[in-house]
Image (tube, rainbow, N blue to C red; front, side, top):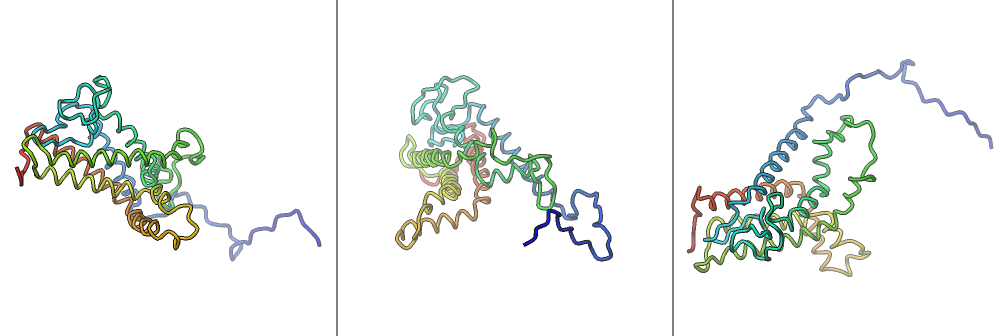
Length: 273
């Protein structure tokens, strides 16, 4: 057997001409930049609104109907108005401390490390890459192997925190049916319930939840209940991107409605009591 150290030359195109040199960064002629642009505008608008609301420290609780916005749940600072604190007030009411400081950091980390949101802000804010067949906006790429991107691997643990926070939001929605005057039902209750349902749908559609339910199983036939649950979560998982955006919308809508009622801008539409 003979060997050769010379590399086999690449075949030349017909006619012996070299490949054409293309100066353009991409040959795409469609408006590929629209999707990243919409993502930047949408996420930026939501972050600005949420940041302003979190540090307003007012118009988050409607005593008459027990409406509490999810941006302030649970309210745990000594600045919280009476009745809005369902888990005590054990943090100082400094301006820089959010009233929901117990949950907001974990919600932020859960969203930041979400598989869909990674794709969204990698492509839109970091241009890495901005679209298919479009070159990366960076000269080098090391993946999620260095700080701070190494923290993306903690997503599965933030999922547990998000599930607990969803339970708290569910409790808030249930309490809203019991106002000081007794059982009541209004438009605010519908908005709170819809928001909670969407939050649960987004949370359990998480890839980590799907793995927890159906992972490490060799035979689904021996675990019919887990297989059924895994099938349902997989159905939601396909819609994880849509649920991610829907929940941003329901969170902002719920907060704005509670703010409007608490500030006296509008009256809650009541159906019972």
